[in-house]
View 1: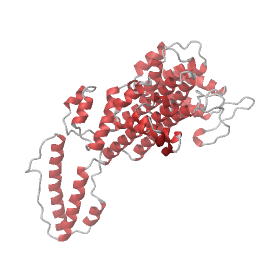
View 2: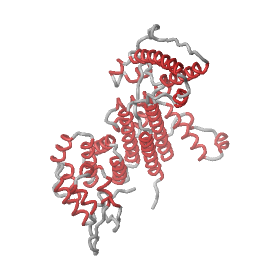
View 3: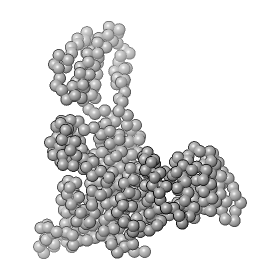
View 4: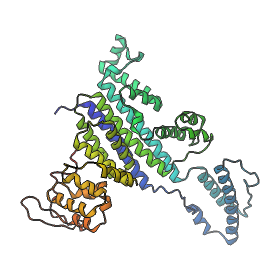
Length: 459
């Protein structure tokens, strides 16, 4: 089998990016991103308070009350973008001894530094957004390198011409090629998202079509720059960059803090994941027109399945909807069914039940076998019929319990006793007696039939 190094490079770049987003999600989950900061004083303070006299404790509490009033005023002024009231912006305290004075000074400095910085949840989300955008830049660079290595004729410009002496200094044509490609990629990455849009456009890949919200996509990159270069506060460049695509940005005052909420970060991960998949596969479809497009679509479907099973339903909806919309009837039946199933499942998981139901009920399922027909019953909530079909598919070895336990399609069935029974009772393999196992107890007695799963994509 001949390996297409260009195709392999594109697919590897997509997988690397999706892997990084997955790792960031795990990090966020482990970090327990809660905006509520603990009110307890630091450990050193609590420990020292045990050794103070009653008079010393009264002094400390008086000072803490004054500090709390000052910081409450400062935070309110910052929130409303108002100047500080000098009469409320300071307080005095007189410690009766050196020990109390040192403890209070250290505590007040600790709290002052803590309050001036973003809380831990905000700090982690900001960092994860910066990492995600930076990883996407690396992804764009990897795609550009792959394209230029595969199609050197696209290299243009003054720095692509060399004298014989310069070539000798490099030592080989390959070294010259690597140098030129490296320079071209660096030039591309030094530009902004509009430059990337133009570059991909020359390859007939529309970057703006890889997202359901192009203005929001552009804003992510502008916000990342503000986080890195202006401590997360809107500046004139941010407003100027976005005023054309997001009119509401004009109302944002220079100096306004641009927070990164949990919802914002999740949207960013979803948008970037969808864009990475669609840009990469779009490049393969446009630059390898003679290759059977079905294999690229199947590869994309398998990655989209993984995104669905991991809960990235917004990304799934964008990918499935975009491919269905832009294919203009050129998809084969199997791939179309898979993409529609993914789209409908995403709509359901995102709460768009009316839209999902309308599409499922209006789509022609005639002529399809049980493997695809049962999807309709699951989506429309006909649990009795769905479980009956699933039982038959298990007996035929055309559906696995792994799929039932892990695929997003079946999540609404979890907890239903009829579905739980299907997870516990094993279907008989051809030529064997039926056996059973209690999955919840972990008593595995028979290997899963895996001759045919819900999807059998190319990996």
